Length: 266
Image (cartoon, rainbow, N blue to C red; front, top):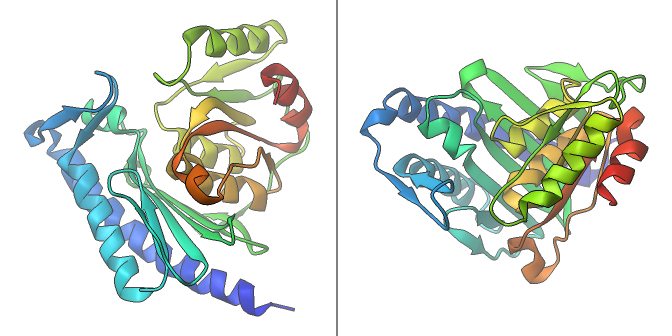
């Protein structure tokens, strides 16, 4: 039996799919003429932003405000706007801006929906691959309409793990995890977009993903996808001011949960 809450999630999920497709098309147009973009840095030379990020987030915010004016919004570029409905949208207009501005296709548009602090919908559009990952609470996860379900036989030893790193953490923290993973017979990849790598966990392309510090807009859509595909994730703090701060991120397919929690001490 479908609950009223689930119906609400599904309605917003379908809305977000349409918005993600529209935002992805605009981002892809910017990507194809990226040589014309003015690139700025944030806290360090590797942390970049462009007019594309701001234009895409503005579009997403405008669409949400028109359709659901009572919902809150948190975006990487323009921060938090409180709502009154109990729903909050969490937006990363272009996750993987560094690959984006350097001409690599490993970037995405990420839109998550929180209800009472829990990620209840997650949509990740990867325009360069023409892929749309979508999930909603108790409704499963899909990739371009095909159901995603994780294979419990996949482990860190017979599959690939995603690892992320950034200027927020000391290099040795990531290096130690990579060394431990390799020592135990695993291997890893980093493509520059944490959100996209989380979507790849949900799709079974990666067996897990770890990053010692990420923000809500980077991970919550991917977390919903992983959960609905049958995986596990480390809860992210979403209460009050914590939602705008960073935290460790870990998601895993069933056969990798114990190993990755031990490797990362999470």
